[in-house]
Length: 508
Image 1 (tube, rainbow, N blue to C red):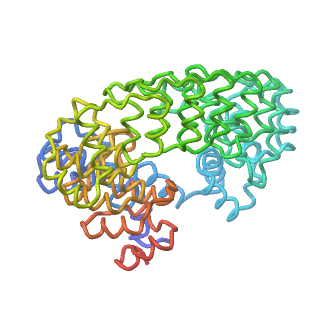
Image 2: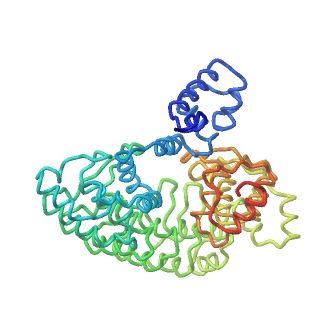
Image 3: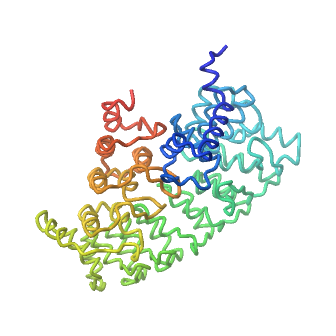
């Protein structure tokens, strides 16, 4: 029988009541409650609790317990008291969302593999599915199971279907079985967080899981290759297996943004395949960026830049902020700038671009002189992404130039994130220190994921993979600045980073 303290710790209702009490106190003007809430939910702002809601209080309670969100904390509490039926439900839910968690559950409870047709679907196990079809002909199109979805969706979105897992080869056969029984190859579901963005079976098979056999089964059954998601996300996989298959089956590149997404990494062959399939290098996004702008910003090689130019990329196209690809190349990409100039790019620059380029080319003594006479810059008028773009490109001298020119260190760019968010994500310790020395906020939350810079550090150290990143140095800088690194993101699994965290007593 659990002790009183254990029961309290595992009692979800206790924490629900705690959140409600906190919300009531904040609305009553309790100063201590307001300070506590603001500490864990910095976006509320000092003294401004207009519109504060229960979900804000729940987030604060979850973060105090070391969890990034209330749903994660709730899941932990619920799993602590599961019976076997609840364990099966949780396993199926994890199988389509969190492969590591699902794998750990299966290793700990191997009996889950034989716990019914829905575990069989997410494991690609054909025999229980065949039995379900024999018993109920309508099963194939009936929404059911823990997620109230059609059976084919469990197969296509299972993370066990990801290419390379021990079970991956099973899923093509499982899908063909369901499709031959009448499953809809274009079945989809709509996630709560994206109510206007249904996700198809093909997206799960090709974009999410990169499972060629599963993707082929869907395409053979008439799946729509132009679903607005599958081609775009298939560019994310190193072997391009499903990406090639989609193009072979006639997937259109038009309005997919697949070319720019392919340019997010160094993948010359994929770029060539998209251009050959009709991708327009001069298609612009909401910021007026062409593929050439994007390639320069993302740090792509001279070979990829040449390929875009050979495909008709416009040399002097200007983004909404008036900047050309040549101007962007002056942000530390001198070899690309030389190529663009040699191909005929205009070298006329705005005063701002000239200043940025001068900073990047300057030696140490000359840079200090440039910073001393930096022009005053009103960044918002030029588009608020410049500061964060320079950080993502690791243009330390140019960032110092903007700061010397009076640009707000907490200006926001992509995802509503600050420059410090991006320095932490990329592992750029030198930039993190410079930004903090200029007053960068450690508690500012981005607008897409509601994470702080220390949270981006923890997540980035495990997921970014920038070869130029020094996350151990970022850890030192953050700790010296008094940052609170979310417990959910540590240990990071990186020996050099965890050694720093251990040295300062943040992990054991």
